[in-house]
Length: 115
Length: 115
Image (tube, rainbow over all chains, first blue to last red; front, side):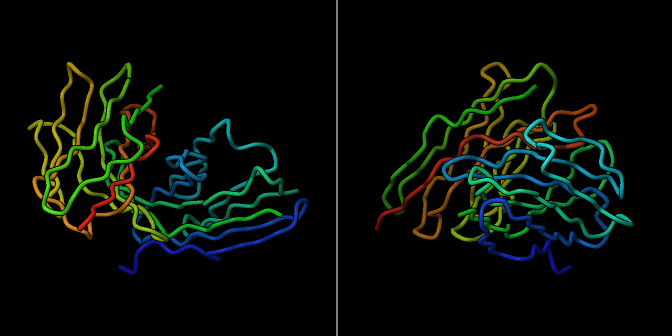
């Protein structure tokens, strides 16, 4: 169990560019979550996968955001035409189980800075 | 929908003193409650969780929390803090049903332990 990993750890991009982040969950975990954390705030839920199916998306996730989890393994989060307001820490978490909310294990996050 | 309010944004305390970090939640359904800790430049780590049963739950690093349904609170306590407890602490709630275990976080409380 190597934990949840995220790449890259830091990303600086210019406004209008596209960026993609990757999350590798703990191998046996079938649930995967993306959260966004801005300075001075708690993480906010963005989207959730159970295996490869994306089952819920927050209203925070505009049309410029898309997430995938092919084959129910790693996940990617893409932001198109980045805006300065997208600057934040993007956190990925994974967990086991159905029904009961098992513990979510968080990755170290990807810090995005849009200039 | 659920919401979480952490009543103190910053809590300074001296080493070996007791500390309480306050958390109130609102929800129209039964909830599960969590406390996470975030050290600088690291992901979130679970301190403790309340799912059901005893309202007093013990976690890692000597922390404990008490679930109070009538006051909709889940305050975190430690009888004697160490310098190493300096970090940001997040209270979070998860509802059952179709929420799939997604977490709603409070704004965070920065605990600073002074020598």
